[in-house]
Amino acid sequence: MDYLIGVDGGGTKTHGIIADIEGKVIAESMASSSNFQMLGVEPVAKLLVNLIYELVEKAKCEVSDVKLAVLGLTGAGREKDREKIHTAIINYSKDQNLQIPEIIIETDARIALEGALMGQPGIILIAGTGSVMFARDINGEIHRVGGWGRFIGDEGSAFVIGREALRAVAKCVDGRGEETILKKMIFEKFGIIDLMQIVSGIYSGEFDIAKVAPVVMEAAELGDRVAKKILDDACDELISHVRAMIKKANFGDKINLVLLGGVLQNENYLSRNLRYRIKNELSNVNLLEPLSSPAYGAIVYAKNYLKNKISI
Image (cartoon, rainbow, N blue to C red):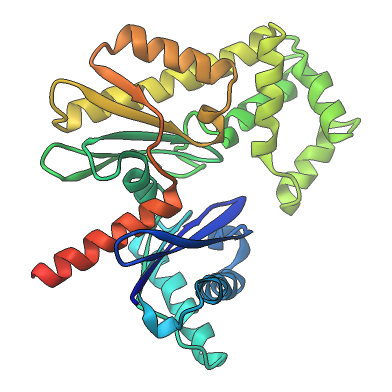
């Protein structure tokens, strides 16, 4: 029997699926973060190869039975980065005398598009640690908006929300900005008495700015004006992503949109506001729940790739 492997490698966890050639799921496995931009290519290559072998073992098959493995990884947006992690996987396998199947490296957002809409035209808007939008138009062409990274993009993401909250707290501490309960809440949440402790943690890599975002959500629910302004601005940015994509591609009369990522899939001030504005400002947009997981989206991607390869 022939098999396919699909992997969704995120900044928090990695989800792997092994399925038969028709797409029926045989087994699943979970692993820790596979963000090779943060953790390095060597340890992530080891994690991914080990995950492939774990899936093969669960399916009670051989690696040679796997026709294709599609790995959708965070941080794999550029061709050079995809080549880097692909080379690391090949090198680790050779060093360990391990056989691996044919592997395609894609972005986690690209496989999320396949899983969420199962090949149908539509848009996905992802806001988790970072943010990006992908879509397939009625001609099957793929389009992207955003996804430019935390330094020049990622609007509406947990990272940017957290960063703006810390900026607001810094201004509050200096007396340059509005009073906000964010200061007290952030200090209590992270057990600090001085903002400089967070600054030191940021530069040492020990403090995750994105983890401030849930505090901002909580402060907004309590009515804090500064927190609400941060989230309102984030909502504006995400709406602008949707408007830009609608202008860019042809989706027909009714446009399906799926919201993904921890920021948008959880119930909070921002997700409620975004859904409200989409329904009231973009009447031709139909909000849908994802049809399947990103990891299964990698299986769909693999099936389509092999089908097109055979037809050629």
